Structure formats: C-alpha cells, structure tokens
Image 1: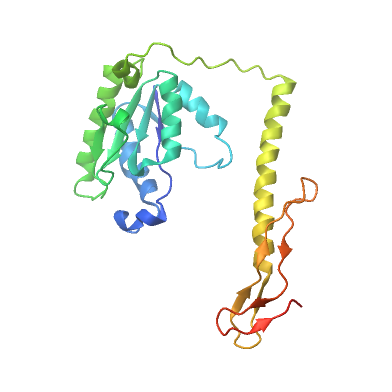
Image 2: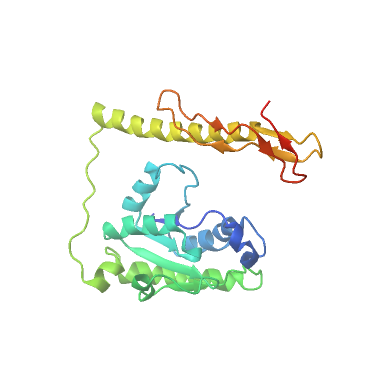
Length: 247
C-alpha cells in the first residue's frame, strides 16, 4: 500500500491556546480525528509525525520524507519545523499535499500561490465527517495531479533536484554521528546544571520572608569544567529593601 507521511505541529503554543479552545492537545486530536481517517479513506497508509529528537532532526523523519509516496503538510500556526521538513521534501522533488486550518490566515507568499486545502479547526462532531471527506478528496487530487513530482517545482519551473546520497555506514561516519549525538547531550546537561545551580541560589529574606535570588554573572570555564557561576557579594530584598551580605 502507498504511504503518506504527516508533517504537522505537535503541540499548541501557549500564546495560541485561546484560539484552540485552550486545548494543549489540539493537534493530537486533529491527527486522530481528521488526518488519519482522511488518509485511510484516500487509500493510503498513514505514517504519523515523530514527536521526539529535539536536538537533531531524527533519521526516521528524513527517511520518511524521502521514501513516502505522499507527504501531507499542515502549515497551521506556521511551525518552523514543518516548513523545514517541507523544504527537504521539496528539494527531493516529491509529491506534497498542502493544508492549513481556518485560524491561520496568512502563509508565505511562495506557498500561498499553490493550491491548498483549508479545514475547519473546531473538529465539531456534526461537521467532522464532511471534513474527513473533503480532505480525503484533496489528498487524492494532490496525488493524482502530480504523482511523481513536487508542485512547487512545476510552478517555479525548476529542474535540478537534490539527490540523496547512498548510506555508506563506514566507521568514520558512525563515529561522526556519535560525536554529534554526544555534543547534543552535553549541551542539554550543561543547560540542566545551569538551571539547577541558579535555582539553588534562592533564599528567604530574614526580615519579610520574601524569596530572593542572588545576582549571578555567567562565566564559562572551558569544556573540562563546564558552566561556572560567579556571584556578586551582597544583595537587597526587592520587597522590603533590607540589605543582606553574602553568607
């Protein structure tokens, strides 16, 4: 069976919660109740988005972007990861199906000129069946109109596609990959230690019990020692003004 990889927002940003009924799992519900049923109705095997690998673009994502028969791209809320993945798919000159919700009023001009489907973001039970039907028809039309090419290439009359390299799997390649992974873990640990150190510097004012934080100046001591905070001796309570000296 032909496959359809879904690239879409995973979570609802805090500043947009009010637009989606304060539902932090809105896009998960969208995936379950609209995208998956519509893709299956179009006769395709859906491949859900991969919600992990924040430090690196997960290798499985790249494989799906290259090998899937179709990529369903949800441009809602203009998520940068989605557009990055759309760029990879476009570079490979592979078929895409573009959609957005009715809350996202504008999209980048270069994509806005391309035919795309607008769906109802409310996911209301009395309209969801029709929404699935309409999206399924758009998926079928996208695949039928350009089964082996990307519509952006056709529109801009491009001709030179990116050619994916063959995986060699040499020892050097594997070591380089592990080094990149290690560097990502090191940065995460560094950030965690920095946050933990700053949190530990809090204390209560002896006069009014207000929680205070010492002034910290960031200092980098090199790769071997990692993050080292320097403290400014003495600080004043922001609530009552009582001046403390460093203990």
